[in-house]
Length: 311
Length: 174
Image (tube, rainbow over all chains, first blue to last red; front, side, top):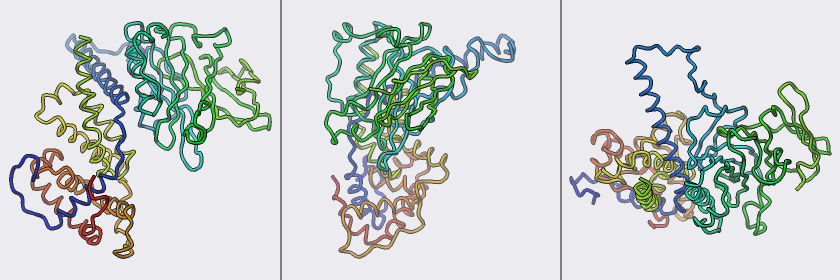
């Protein structure tokens, strides 16, 4: 019997068996909980994009009606050209997004929505044959009005990944939250699944001096430990990914170099995240000391830190 | 306005929670891969959220979203050109007593993988989603005649694996 109970259709030989086989196969699929927060964030992003494009189309139509020709300064509008490939906004489930080196000029991506994070992949690798990656999600400063809503979304994403903490209450968020800071959440994805227990950083929003919003002056050259919080030994998936470190650097940093004491070197990409002016680097740890060197675009050495990878 | 938005989100939340398992299973049968299925369904639900007003005005919101899932699968299939590991023939089976449950599952997935996307969609919609030919045609955006022929060809191909189809004891439907 079909759902709509309409036309009796000619029976096809074997269809009952196929129905049973498909049903059996589908029944073996573990569906897990719906990633509601990620769906919601993605849906809102689509709404924002659609409104932005509608606004753009409307503006173009108005220009056309006025008989104007938009050939101002080579066609570049007041917001400047879009940053080619500089920002990526992807869903939690999407682990195939591109690495994003380079800069994303502030203001090039439309209004900030504190409920719609921008994500980039900051590190990737393979461990025991399984691909892993580290992602950073930038949640723009929410202000007092939306801080609870944002905190709930951030919590929901992590809860869906298995983090057992209770949802943040409005009272708690109002008391301890930082409404005027951008919130950057780092998390691992192992073999296509997001792992619980993220690392987080609160950073200054665009327009303010770049840096972490807590601690002392050293936080203009901050670091975030990743993957060290595995609580349940080997049972915790976080135990099976390499420990790593992400670092906030100033926007004048063009190149970073890590030199381990055994002579191995690495050049982590300097990454931009959304419209934030902060830049990020990330390195997988190797269990031995290393020195970090930061260079400007002209090749001059800006800073060194011999303890940056210590933790 | 805030209250209205919260109400809309709550409504959407309830829908997502309720529809997720079945949509995942449908997408899994279409894609043959659980993670890909999750990705397809998540994308479809994001689109759904952006059109939630229209979806709730539809007679059957689930059918509306299912169509998005089918379209999303078709779109990805077209874009990739090289589809999900199509094989020209399903490997020979070892014998009627040699099938473990997981073998059956793998064999059926592989068999589904041999079907072109249209046949696969028709088979899944007709025999897993239990849609009529008319409903399947609406979901696929094609004519009833196309559904008939695609489903029939799909079934015939699957039936070539007679041992697989006649045994069909893969967990026997949860």
